[in-house]
Image (cartoon, rainbow, N blue to C red; front, side):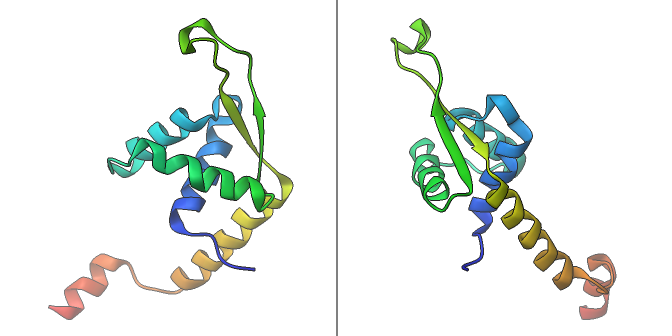
Length: 111
């Protein structure tokens, strides 16, 4: 199985954190606020759908709202498979970081 990209991992983690408020724009804002990156708003939807197709997310439409001109939001939820993939991804990251000295220490040694 291919590893998650960093952006996919950020999307899954954002959806897990946002719970019932996880829809495209809220996920976009959460990632933007934490990373400081000004992402293209449309750039969030393709990876969301890719994660749905992989079985890591479930999507369902909410109720139409007048604020959105009668359009409904598409809400996302982490699946069991998505949670397992996040756990696997964290284990891999932890393995890379395990036993390394703090980066501040490492940077002093290279100067």
